[in-house]
Image 1 (cartoon, rainbow, N blue to C red):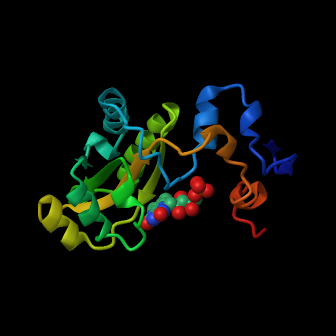
Image 2: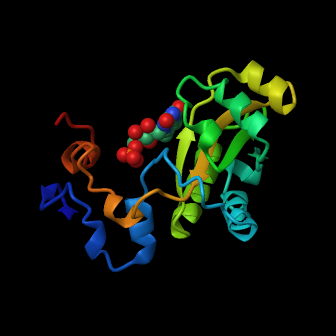
Length: 188
Ligand SMILES: Cc1cc2nc3c(=O)[nH]c(=O)nc-3n(C[C@H](O)[C@H](O)[C@H](O)COP(=O)(O)O)c2cc1C
């Protein structure tokens, strides 16, 4: 807990003792790239994930994001070739490419993406955002309009082990004292 700049055990969110399942889902979410190849994500759960993205707020409610769901393995491999760090993409049970309208803000896509990944996590499904560096190739592959751009690809699948034991510890994040500035900027 941080209060007025005083720190007390600030760096470990202690996911296991959180009383709120909602907070556990948020803080326990990790970006994981290895999924159980034998467990399919069923259509109802996929609908929930898509619904969670659709419901994200956007600037002026312009709703500038669209989700392209890749089921076809050829397209999954194709989009992996549009990413510099997407080796796990072809093997991911579900791949969703978020594209955004001209003039839209990346923040809108971020809100939709995190909603989707948290909805998945609430159903025990892991996920990972994957940056798409080669927009032109992605546009040819997925046929979205010329002036739209890829915001992010997201991969989803069931974890291979017990997801709960892999919940976030906070050890790979900056300290709360660095993350939080009180009133004005301070160097830590
Ligand atoms: C904007 C953004 C782009 C990312 N791009 C990739 C990517 O191209 N490939 C990948 O494997 N992970 C990617 N990641 C996942 C990060 O590596 C991950 O968020 C970070 O390592 C923290 O992981 P953790 O939550 O499991 O601690 C990306 C994350 C963000 C937010």
